[in-house]
Image (tube, rainbow, N blue to C red; front, side, top):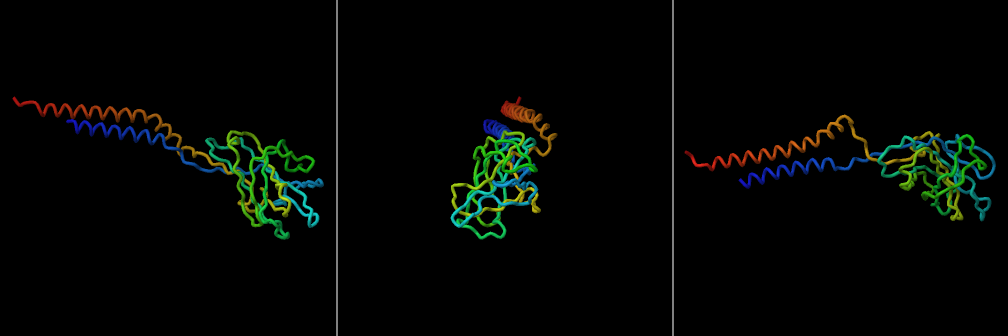
Length: 248
């Protein structure tokens, strides 16, 4: 009797553990890409607007062999109003290449800072006179003379941000040599070259109706499992007691 009773209890514990474990499994992760609502480059001299350019230089250019000055910056704007929930990471992705026609610079790898912009701006109206100032440094990346994408992980404080947010990409002024790079914008012909926010988050349930039904029925499933085990144990005990009763 004891062995059968113990077996029934084991089945009950296994059933409970299975239900608990399936409800405690972490949701699968997926990614959502958000495209910029505006982007542009702006020169630090003159008043030319580059809001509709497919790509533009960002960084420095040499006025002479020994003199380098920052000539232009890039800025991108994203709307986070409809971003997904349960976010685990946000990455700013941009693509840079060596400026067409320029000689590869030394050092080949140059650092670009990513700062949050401090005020609003428009793609059609941005110039050096209307551009936002650079705010908090949120990250940086190193670019060489090869065309490639560069990812900058944003702080977790952006997980809960809403509305629009802008980032300024500029050369690190601590580097005293090197030429500018060409950055691709949302007008680029190749979709893979365009800036984007890559958001990793928990995947939503595949079927909301099935999820609701499962949530409602899971306590009853557990209850029936426990009751079934109890009745099963009682039945086994009763049968064993009868089998030991002396025959008349």
